[in-house]
Image (tube, rainbow, N blue to C red):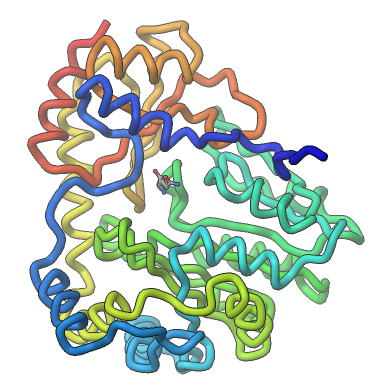
Length: 382
Ligand code: GLN
């Protein structure tokens, strides 16, 4: 008897590879999307308070009611809606888990799931492990990764059960407009197609723009699961807590699986987040990350690297390095880390088959001094 890997994605993901290499090389780590700066002191104190106050046993399966209430209130206020309630919010151990569980809830063996490349690396394995058939729609770098609605329409078949989308988008930094949502609504129309909407960077949108959540789309809000991450919003990726928002009907099915995958989520962290939602400043993350984006972008101006479209949100900015190297992007990322001590992520990691673009992704969710020092190096590479 032998075991097989049940998906066709890389057995070790690029984020692990590059962060390990960055550590080994003592390089500035602009690769994996993990902040290196301190978290809010209130979060730190609230987590300790939770343990001292005795919030140390299993939370309810769907999450602490105080946390779900505060999430629902926050979202309803922010988006002037009444859609969210404790019954439409489920706390998850991170968003990757949320995406996996959403797909487990929606798809049956042999169902097709459409997703758009470049895509975060967990989408493909999450579809395949759940018995789905991935249908890729590849967006082109030379077209600035514009969403190709024609290609999406063509990808739909009688077997399409779901489409997996991401806004704000990792790695391009594109943020969906209402027009994008309307286009998707037109495609779904009366079809029985569900939408899994990865919105983990919802709090990190720049230049006065607003994130538009999936659950707000009246045309299909009984067919969508929107997935969020406190890890990104509050710079606590190691806490591994997120949440899903979906109609009560979808939520019920989602929870039926969730309770047997993990049952419940870290209680002290839920307590701390419930309290923190009552005091946090909603614009803070976007303001802070926008300043960091600008520090990187201005620091690389001029440089031999060519910026792609400015990041509208997320932790990331793409750059083209074709002016200085013919190496493929995996080789270039290794070379840059080993020879110049700046770690990055090759864009090809976001595709099923490596691309011939000469593009890498830099993460700017880093201390200002790290961004400045890395930018200084990058200005002079040749
Ligand atoms: N979301 C993070 C990124 O894009 C990485 C998460 C992970 O390591 N799986 O860099």
